[in-house]
Length: 72
Image (cartoon, rainbow, N blue to C red; front, side):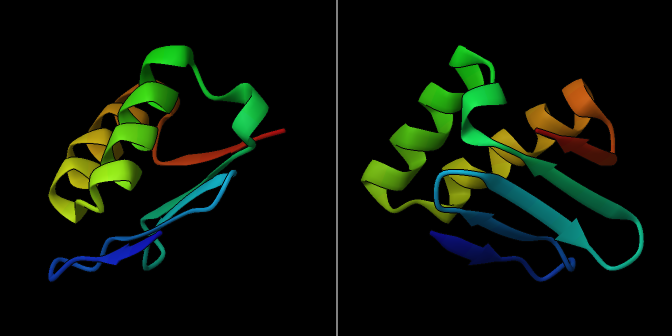
């Protein structure tokens, strides 16, 4: 699932999670490294095909891992 937002955020969730926003944000997390609560929220947004729900997850991820993270 790919979501793009008017403020420049872009999310790609297809197992691993990738979040970008220009040079400000670059997060990549392998699926096996996602915390269960975040993974559940991502899967629910995917199931509902909801970029709105995905946006809420982005904020949780960047607060948890920071705006620059690569977790394998």
